[in-house]
Image (cartoon, rainbow over all chains, first blue to last red; front, side, top):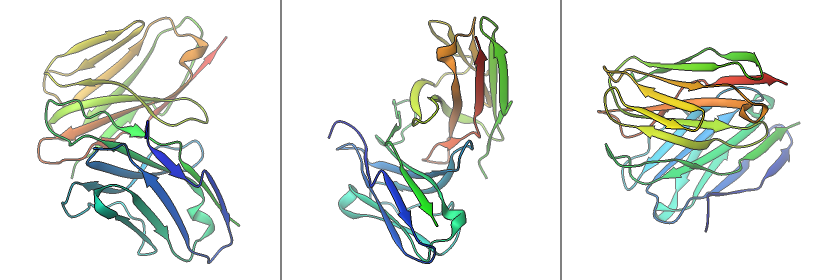
Length: 117
Length: 111
C-alpha cells in the first residue's frame, strides 16, 4: 500500500475483554514499531521488530500485552483483559532497516484509538 | 540504557516570535530525526541529521546536531499558527538498532 495502515481506526471495548490491533507496514520495510500515546502525552515505546531478529519487547507495560509480526510484514498487537488505563491511541510505524547513515524515516499509521469502558 | 530527553515540555509563543526545542542524549548518537505531530494527527518525519555539527534548514526551520552528537535542536524563526503541534526528536545510538523518541515539545502559537 501507499502508507502504513492500521485497523480498526477506533475500538470501544468493555473492561476485561481482549482486543487485537492490526498494522500493515509499508512493503519492504523491515523495521516496525508500536507506540502508545495517551491524550496530550508523548510516544510511549511498546515493541520493536527488525527483520528476523528477536523483537525488542522492553516497552510492553505488562504481560497482558503481546505482539506478533507474521512473515516479516503484518503485525498484531494484542491486549488481554483490557483495563481502563489501556485507553489510548496505539500508533504503528515502519521504516527501512536502521543502518547508520541511511535515511530511516519512520512512517506512522493513523493509529487506533482504543477506549476501554 | 539509551535515553533521549527533550525540553521544554510546552511552549506558548505569540505569532512572529521564535521557538526552540532541545534534545539531549545520555550516549553518543549515530543519527537523530525530528518529527512533527499536528493536533489530532500522527507524527510526520521532518529531517534526519547524521554528521557531527550538521546544520540543515527547511524554510523557517533550522536543525542542528551537536559536535559531540549528543544533542540536537530545532529552531523556528517567526512562528506562524501553522507551526502549532508537538515536535519530537528521535535518536539512534551506535549500539542499538531502534530509534528512541524524546517526550516531545508541544508548541502553541497565539495569533
